[in-house]
Each structure stands twice: as C-alpha cells, then as structure tokens.
Length: 310
Ligand code: NAP
Image (cartoon, rainbow, N blue to C red; front, side, top):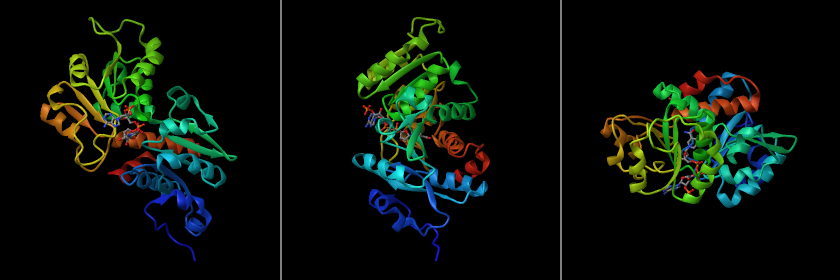
C-alpha cells in the first residue's frame, strides 16, 4: 500500500536506509532542504505547491543534517534518485568544497544553496544573490545599483552571495560587517575591482570592511541607505537585534534575510525608527523559484509558490 509523506523531518540515519524508510512514499521524495536547524524552513510548502501546480509527481522534504554529517549526507545523495536539494544555514560554504561541479554563481561566492544531481554527480549553484536582488526590487521598488548597502554577516553563505550581487550591480557603496573581521576583509579584497570608479560624491570610500562593533557601524551608518541582516540573529523569537536600534533612522531601508511568522527584533527597531523594513520571505520566494528553474529547466509557477508562503 502506498503512503503519503508522514514524517515532518528526516535525518542522516533515514538517508542511510532511504529505500526502506521512503520507498513506499507516494509521490516519492526526490527533493529537499538540508539544514541545522531546519524545522523553520518554509521551502517544503513553497516547493510542494510548485510541484503540484506543474503536475510533477514528486515531493520536497526537510532533512535535519548537522555540520559533521554533511559529507556523509552528500555522499549518499549521489547514489539516490534525487533531482536535487537546497542547502540552508550553516551548510552553504562547507558544501562548496564537497560538490563535483560548480556553476559561475557558486564559484564566485564559494557558497552553494542549490544542488542538482546528475549521473551521480552534484552540481552546485547559488541563487541567493539573484533572489536578494529581486526581493529588494519588489519590497522597496528600488534597484540595488542606486543604493549604499551595509551587510551584517557578510562572511556567511547568504552574506557573501548578497555582497557579490551588490558588486555585480555596481551599487553606490558597500560596507561589509562581520563578527570575524578577516572574512569581511578577504571578501572586500575580492570585490575591490568593482568599486574602483568614483560614483559617490563626498569622502566616503565606496567599499569598506568593518568590525562587528557599534562604534564601527555608527561611523558608517550616515552613508547607508539599505541595511541587510544576513546573520541567523532573529531565527529564535528571543534573539536580540544584530544592530542597535539607536543607529536606525527614518531614511533607512532594512531587509532581514530571516523570515518567520513574527517580526524580528531588527524589524521592530526599524518600525520604531520610522524606517521601512521587510523580512526574508520575498528572497525565499525568488531564490526558490530560481532553484526550481535549475532543477526542471522550466519557469517556476511563482504565484502558486507565493500563495503557499502567504
Ligand atoms: P552562515 O553561512 O552560517 O553565516 C552566518 C553569518 O552570520 C556569518 O557571517 C557569521 O559570522 C554571522 N553570525 C553568526 N552568528 C552570529 C552572531 N551571534 N553575531 C554576529 N554574527 C553572527 O548562514 P547563512 O546560510 O548565510 O544564513 C544566514 C541567515 O540568512 C539565516 O538566518 C538564514 O535563514 C538566512 N537566509 C535567508 C534566505 C532567504 O531566502 N530569506 C536565504 C539565505 C539565508 P562569522 O563569519 O563570524 O561566523
């Protein structure tokens, strides 16, 4: 007898005996997201809506894979009849060194959020940067190229992809903030060629890497339009804001890559400061639609995906 999918979340142990665990599930699970944590991920409801709309007989599931399990999980994935997976926190950078091929988007960021499985090989891409770009356009009706952007958490998988996208768009100004400053410095060196031309009037440098300190953020914030949180701060309801509320002003736009049912502390601070804010749902939608396109080589049913998220 065929089953519907019943398990909310699978693990490495399940992947190790996948045919036994999932052989009966109908439609079969052939896509998923690997993360730790992963319970928060809304990708399954969004991608399953897309699969149903396109009448593709398969399902997308959550996999709780810890950092020390990623290598084994990816080895098993090569042998299963999966179409592909998404990677979420904290796997995007580690996965880059464990795949067989990377396209241009993954190579330049050295981070992967989408894998396609083909002939037992894992091919990595990164749709976070383009997803971010589309999200900013739809949330704030502006183009990144016209903005002075500050990224909090520029050393992580999402932060790097967003920084690269801002550089490719030739944004007015880019400030990279990271807890581990060396990572922000190294990224700034890679991106420097994009910022050689003089676009901003005034003395502020177009590209800077700064420490994760209030004084350093304060020194930059007057020359910033868009603040992006690309750290996991906000994923848990009690998390403090990654940026002190007193630094925010009404002219700021605040984009929190974190998404969830309630407002993060950062978005509450933005509201109190009279600034515009948006959570990461629209980025999730657009990076997910681009993932779907990579897996199936066809346009994603974006309205069905959006409806499933809302
Ligand atoms: P990641 O690769 O693990 O990167 C985490 C980043 O946050 C690093 O820069 C890290 O700094 C920094 N960080 C972690 N804890 C911190 C703390 N307590 N204080 C200050 N900085 C801290 O994670 P990721 O995959 O980039 O994801 C980051 C966040 O973006 C997650 O919440 C994820 O859900 C979200 N995201 C959302 C979307 C979307 O579609 N909406 C897409 C991608 C990511 P160090 O370098 O010093 O470790």
